[in-house]
Amino acid sequence: MALTKVSKSLISTDTVFSVDAVGGVYGTSSAPVTIAVTVATKTAAHPYYGDGSSSAYFLDGLESPAIMLNGADDVTSDSGYYYKFDQADSSNSGHPLLFYLDAAKSTAYTTGVTTSGTPGNASAYTRIDIDSDTPKVIYYQCSSHAYMGNYAVIPASKNFYNLAVGGTTITSTGAELNILDGVTSTAAELNILDGVTSTTAELNILDGVTSTAAELNYLDIATLGLTAASKAVTADANGVITLDNGFSEEYAAVTSSSNVVSLNLRTANNFSHDLTEATTVSFTNPAASGKVSAATLRIIQGSTARAITWNSSIKWAGDVAPTLSQADNAVDIFVFYTLDAGTTYYGFTAGQVMS
Image 1 (cartoon, helix red, strand yellow):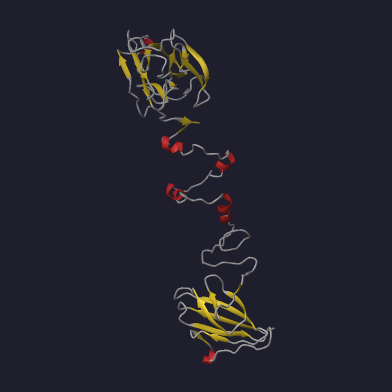
Image 2 (cartoon, rainbow, N blue to C red; image 1 turned 180 degrees about the horizontal axis):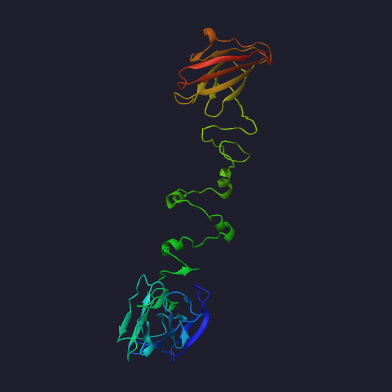
């Protein structure tokens, strides 16, 4: 029978030849489709010219073609297709043809493969029964010599084993390849990963991350420890943060309720309070013991002078609490800090009558 040129291969730029059915019959176990095998000297057209043996297999007169072997379908009553590689020609002597999962023959493929006779003698052949479990790509090679043959593609196969792209063998499992199902990244976006040296464990840290690209870009920092506009704040190797454009902080305007004004140290560190009634100052949510919480408090006196009652936890210099300025709109500023979770606050008068 003859081989028919059909297309470029799915796995290379080689021309692929289809092993056609004869009269619509795809071969049976007793009457397989037969391919005549001979052996002759390699030419420069051989896919492995210069490698391995100086001899090559010729299939139906073609030098080691890439071939397509059809697999099982619903057309025939047989569960598979059957192909016999006839090695009766005397040139086959010493060159048994077998099948492998790679061109270098590191793994033999024997499922559905039977041999008969001695190559170079009458009735010698190797037969392969193709079904949907046959690997997508197999290689026909001489068991005694290297790189005499080529590969065969099985279009109906569900079994991708040792598939190679651009000469690189794919080792991913089907489940791993299915992770790419639905990926919409462009080539340029995927090329960003070129050169990434992260381990699987390091990449798995990202498992479950819901951040957007814009949010992740906040971490795109030129120099650790140096602040930059619209970027996350980081510390350098010494734990130092350098503020590139100075430091600013919001203040909280607080009001009194039932003669108490509460300074929540978790929400702010700078407070301003307009006196509208006699008021007691209290603090909430200081840092844990051993850490510092600090706050400044600006008090603006009202048109009617009112007094402040300082919390007993505040310690003042000389144990004397300050008296507020009495003039309308007079501004007094005080500073407090604690390092024992609020058991004791140290109070300082920063300035008075600053209106």
